[in-house]
Image (cartoon, rainbow, N blue to C red):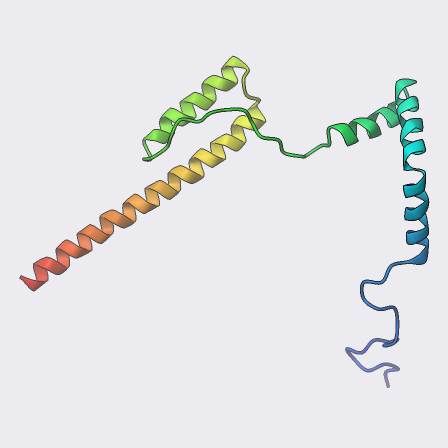
Length: 140
């Protein structure tokens, strides 16, 4: 025989959902109070060529993975064929050193996605016209 019923907590009156650990709250309070002094020490260590402190400071100034706008102007894409011109512009920007390959790859995804959307809308419109013509010919 099981000690607890299936699906029921062993301590139904336990810690309420969303409540925080007292130690975590205390540590956060101490760090908040000492934030300025700790920041100064980290900067001093970084200036003293402490690589770990330097890395920590740089991660705060320029965090990894944070996307930033790419200063690049794409030509207008109104039809799928316009995507060829946009892709050419991106490739040339990489060749000129105006875009990194990673930035170019992200822009290419945007162009491909938009081009596919335009293509799909065009196909849908053509199909609609064909269906209308078929319906008109059946009525005649």
